[in-house]
Length: 404
Ligand code: MEV
Image (tube, rainbow, N blue to C red; front, side, top):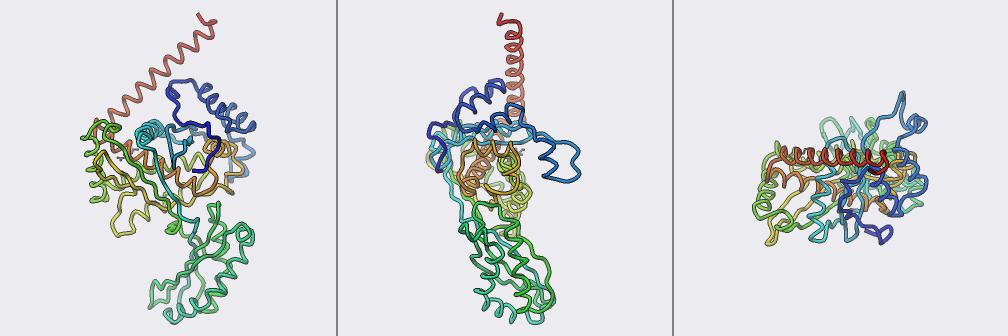
């Protein structure tokens, strides 16, 4: 990860025990936050009605969620603070805890593919789909030119149309679909590729005949993927039984879609929480993740764990359509603050951190399930939180009374 300031550490022991204002002060002391973001967070991080009214329609108020920082993450040999917005208790603590265990063996390592989004143009009632396919493929260069002319800004920034597929979905009824693969740079890219699909449709129609159908991105961006891996030692996990238990749990998910979906829900606990904090389209990430998990014909886990001599090895592979420009990244002050804290440079780095957060969440869940069970872990965390809150209340009272 090319990084922010070298001084930043994501290892902040006792952070959870601090009062909110002290936690925020620690974040401010990293030097990552702009004055504007500091003011915004000190004010509680509320979205103003004015901004909300620009983001959606029929707005009557704003809807809040906790904004937290998951700690201990080391990704591609750099520490990274991981903002999370999530309503479910334990997600942030569990991810931070798992990241601490992974950190002991170097942290998470990942890579993202080039930011290639997929867009689809549908044609119906095409007279001879097989022949139409050949005609469309022969016009590849011209179609790419029309595509690029529709997105001059993106082409100027180094993006543009890269590849094409023509798929006959239903020969007798003449259903033919053209995929265009577009490099969208650091954007999530939905608008960019929708524009491409609409621009190329008329020319392709001249080649296919029939009628033009849908022109829209696919939320299964198979060519825009993130892969993350990590190793965790037996000692960090708390013993060989836990290591074996995690691997057996992973195998269970590989064998059974009923388990795989819950396993993946645990992965998405981390991915979605970061997506929300970073203003990403989490519905699209969710849709892509589950479609990808089903690609083999059986719904499969997005993270797989195997046993090594010294512990376990984890691998995550999933589509990840995220952006660092456009969308709410520009308008939402809290999202901008989250970007400053995470300090990533581009969409690929964001995808890798999100993959790492998903892996950490999955690891924490499997470790709990393979050990004491999820309920006891939840209850322990809950009572620890209550103790911390109680002692913070006592401290606050003391300060009010003049430090007696
Ligand atoms: C709960 O939010 C997520 C888990 O169900 C995930 C899993 O079972 O692996 C604990």
